[in-house]
Length: 134
Image (tube, rainbow, N blue to C red; front, side, top):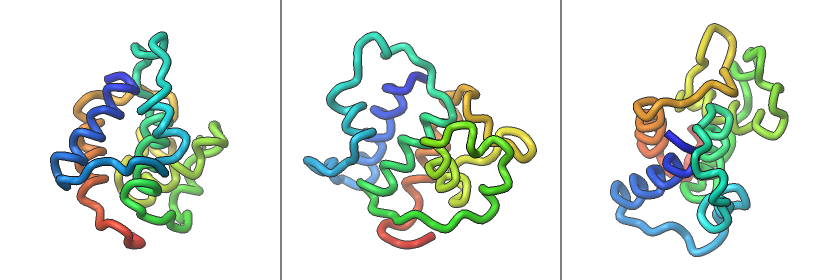
């Protein structure tokens, strides 16, 4: 699954499950990049776990309005700071049980996400209560 395919799948599943449209604005820079400015030369980029986490996290914050939680077990991941920009997003999806570690004590930032995994992550995300601390 590519980055763009994942983003589009997430948007479609959200609309189908909730009957709601995306907000006109305020989705956050990262999500708006995928929505409006995604360059054609990147269309074939495979979805990595760190990009998946960032998309899910921004969707949680800006669309579902689910606030961040305090880090607990995510701080134990040995690769959590391999991408400093991604660290909080990874921690948030990990703490909520949306994306598990890929191997013992490692998130696996650059591993590719399969279509089945992506679908499971979206299902878990959309089953979380809105606007509540989980």
